[in-house]
Length: 294
Ligand code: GUN
Image (cartoon, rainbow, N blue to C red):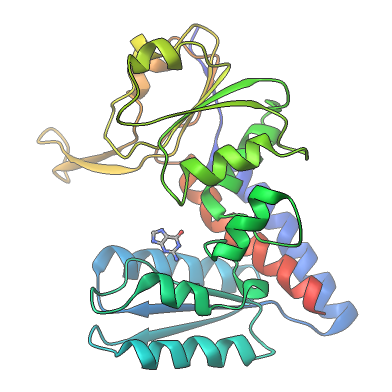
């Protein structure tokens, strides 16, 4: 039987409606309007598109959204000055510096300059450390938080389940493993993290109750990697050449959807899966930041 679809697009629509209500109530009760600042350095087409989508989603939901676009040759010191200005700005509750940054800028130095209380991307080492230790307030990185929210809202609580995460990046695999391990809602899972050096990957992924794939390789996970009944979340998004398509390309994930959806019990598609959730969690973090500040 083909798998049930876990639609990040539908879950996002529901969450954004909930958040819009919260924003309207906050405005009416306290006069506070959550503010998100995005900083884009240079003119990379993909980054411009992602930042544009984040700002559009923020303003549609009633947030104050401010985009700061700087030339590619902006000195690091000037970018640090922009971040410090945003840290001190009471109208801004969330700061996102779009990555990657040009080579002459030290990304770690810029991320560490963001006030952790406004780190709605969850990339600051203090945010990562608090996620690991479970102490103090922090914002979860948006993509892993989106994966957990998709599991919970589709009725697949990871508690007690064996979750296999394929991919160990700083922005998805590792923080996701930590979120799933926490003694907190959305956590309490048994977690295995696989990566490029894992021996016999398919033997490990077949032991999963829930399989999350964030390896960054188009359609790498096939039906051979998935035991019948597994819940599969695909974090990947890729454009691959497709001469049969009018556009000359198609969008796919890290999972070979047609094959795996015949074996899995539930699966998230790509596009329409984790992608929209990442932006929704950024908005949720910004609203939460405004609530804490107000
Ligand atoms: N570049 C690609 N994805 C992201 C993201 O989620 N946040 C930031 N800041 N940069 C990115």
